[in-house]
Length: 122
Image (cartoon, rainbow, N blue to C red; front, side):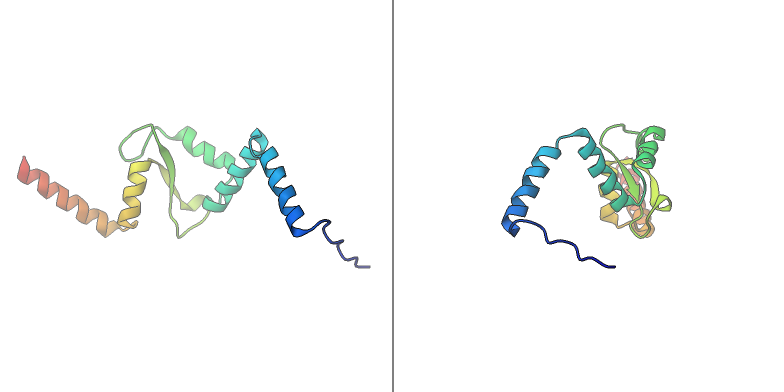
């Protein structure tokens, strides 16, 4: 037989106050931090925290310039899961790819423009 869930105790304001206290108590604990990171990675990339960490362990710096600081996991926003992961790159190149819009023609045109500029100024 179906039983209805009992209503939450307390007013909406009391429940919100309890939730805020709970969050303040838990937010700095290592377990909470790891759970939050795992949830965000699953939401943003569609992969596990272990898989995310493995990409960084295997990386030898940015795939574009080789830098080892401010590294991020680059992924295709039109896909989700492991097949969306393109590799580990530095934040600067991640921003640059975002501005170009993951458009190969835009990247080619940028390369041509800079190549022409450097040949003319050399």
